[in-house]
Image 1 (cartoon, one colour):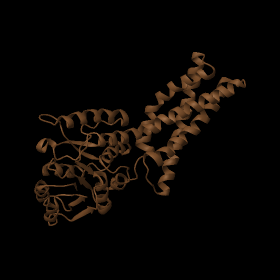
Image 2 (tube, rainbow, N blue to C red):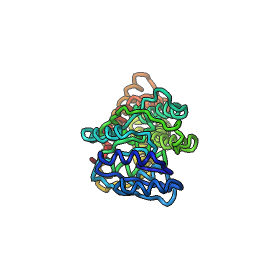
Image 3 (cartoon, one colour):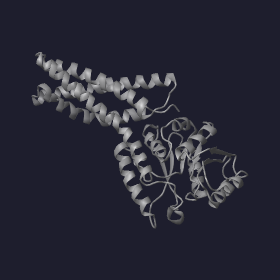
Image 4 (cartoon, rainbow, N blue to C red):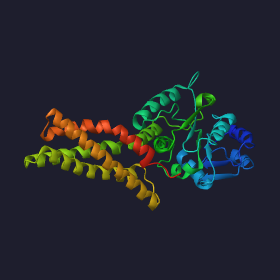
Length: 343
């Protein structure tokens, strides 16, 4: 449970949780007030981890993950009273059966909900769906259950502040199971005045985090078709047969773009180290998928171009349509097989 400048509500929550959980860990994220709250909380928790300065909610969660390790399931909750002990317990209970994906406590946003919370969740929810393909009804929830096997993966994701929680949700598209969503009570204390979320700065961080998950696909798409068009133009100028042009251009384009996509995802998007064997397995699965999709794409492009009588650089348009058709199948295979976590 990360906390920044807490008040008495934190002590009430901890006292009610003490009998429900075997381990309670509190993170003081560089608080400048509420020192007496932390002093009184020491008898209610296993450990209070302290940041010497305010580093952000994401950094506080990672500090807790590092302390707990991967020996047990983890439930994260906010310290401002917005999550009831009953709802926190629901998330823990759900982890007993939901072992390969996140468990989320989602609010209904019905009734008297602060405008900034209602508006922020509406736009973030739809933006999240467009960029990841996942439907999450409450993208801003801090009440989450993480199975022990996924804790190391989650802890390695980029982000220090609120954007880290969005990165955690976006990464869920690669988990073996989709997030399991449990309805929880919608609680706002003093019109959500206790929230440390900055609508402008933190929204920029969140959308930047979301955007990076689709940038690699767009760049790979552009690079693939640029190489394909260039190769077609060069080979057609040398009077190569159309079928040979398409085959060579397709192979060259896919070889360049696929390696760019793999290493961009590995070093830029996810920015985490993996064990050597895990890297080899994911790379091997990725190359196998590239070959399979490449063969299917070549066949679809060649057959379509022949039926339509398309020649020269114009074949690139046929290829783009073929790529779009195969994109959805490729996405599902990557999510369920290529980049599945080692659990």
